[in-house]
Amino acid sequence: MAKNILAFGPNGSGKGTQGAIVKEKYGIDHIESGAIFREHIKGGTELGMKAKEFIDKGDLVPDEITIPMVLETLGKSKEKGWLLDGFPRSKAQAEALDKSLTEAGMNLDYVIEIVLDRGIAAERIMGRRLCANDNNHPNHIAFDAIKPVEKDGKLVCRVCGGELSVRADDQDTDAINKRHDIYYDTDTGTMAAVNYFKNAGGAKVISVDGSLGIKEVTEAIMKELA
Image (cartoon, rainbow, N blue to C red):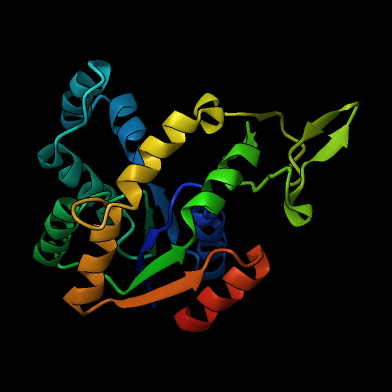
């Protein structure tokens, strides 16, 4: 049976890693909000072109453009099921998405929340490395279980041997704080979105301790999804 899942967790919580594991386990589509924008813009869709106008100006894409884009992408995965990662990021987006899913006849089955202290999350961000082949290949210089491997004198992806890079904003404390300010905001930000779904009922909310190891976090999630 298809599962429809929202995944929440601050930058540095391992949300992308866990999303990839859930995708593999249940054969559902792992959909990242950034990829939705790129797909529509690359495809030259009407919504994509409208979004590009805002992105090119450095502005946030309005919800009236973003929500239909998200729904269209989710609709393509209706039979398989999906895990949506990176959206919604605010209480207003959560309310709009919930309403739109209902109108589209799509159930939301689970909400996964990876809970992590803000200070630990910031430390983890600065140690992560991105694989050129797949950003969901976990590589982190501080964790033995997912440390990159050394080849010809340089570190490469532990999964596929791909080239690794560091996001500039992962080393910028101001940029990290800006991202976390949005996530940890319980009034209007992403945590407010999490709390909205906790109070809305319907979907089962799975909250797990993100300070545990990758394997332990996975086990905690799988136990509730089974």
